[in-house]
Image (cartoon, rainbow, N blue to C red; front, side):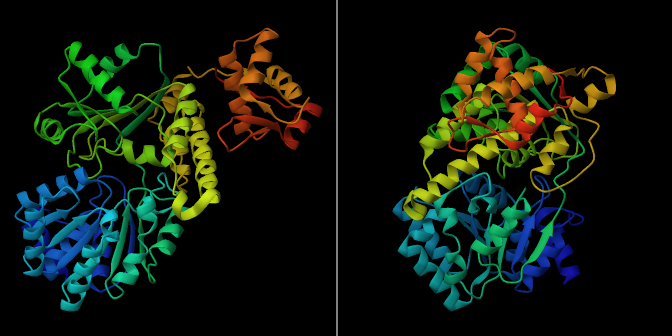
Length: 501
């Protein structure tokens, strides 16, 4: 089997050897064993299910979250001469019938489909037919963290993917993700009903990435242009809203940068043009929503720039991980404003959750989780410790400081100067202790009225005191603050609180 795998690897993909973590997953699937593969971006997760389809000459069914992602991977496989296709609701009836014919004639090796397709009766019938004929080699769930309430997504149809095991009880299943904290891994195993799975987890640490996070100025265009001009290879600029994507692409074009927008609201022709631009130009700049980049094969991305605070630390690890997949140096820059958390919170509430499945309790759990995740990424952005260390800690990985990020550079140069905030902290805690719970906005307005500092600085201090666990914040998005017992203890016996600001 090892010789056969090496030959297939060279013949189909041109690789001389496996990347770390790939071979055990491929071998386990071929032996009929379930797997959970948590491999960092650029580690070649897709090969883990693609190679078994070629070695066994059967069909691997791949559940993937985005049609654009599926189409991109299918096109890459087809360019290599590998029979692959995707089944989605946008196919014309003739195209769908032709695809089904290819599947039944065993002329297809990989079939990609969105999770929603598993709710369609014709798809279930197709699975029954494939099982009866013994044509299924394996099942794969890509971006498997989406199945977990603790992941950085909460997608109803991913939550229902446990039915794959019941629909295909004897077929090995592999779940794949670039990052997954221990709690998320446990959720994936439980909800996908993996049987005694091989668990393959590789470090998410990327020694070629430089992380930096800065306050976003009123007009960040000069900083954006400076970052783009110093980047090698391709550039990904991420904006949260589709309108922002369009506006920033236009602003960059007006500044002489050949930038194109990409988001789900564009017509298919413009999306194809933008994707071709990104894949074929020597130094393309693409302005996109964060979904763009999953599975897109562009190894020399030299800059990933976020124009807003990311929604979660785990999500940011995946998004920033699209940089430097060729091993070359790459920069990951976030330009954020504290107000981003409020706008993100509103967007999360407006998006709604899996209410039909989980009811009011499930929706409350989703909102509370989202608020905790927002506080976590905010603490990374405003914190004074190593960026990479703080990010990896959110997925359960403890590493020493990287020595490369902006915070590590500041410490080494001595430019990270701290000052004592004990007096202001005591003032804030004492005011908060006068009543049971206080809205953040009301609290900082009163503190600013009393003089000494502006509202933004008091809000920053409140966030630091939440991080220090002297006060707590409600998880309903209302940003209501409460004095904790440790905060009362601080008022009785204060200790130094020093931060750079």
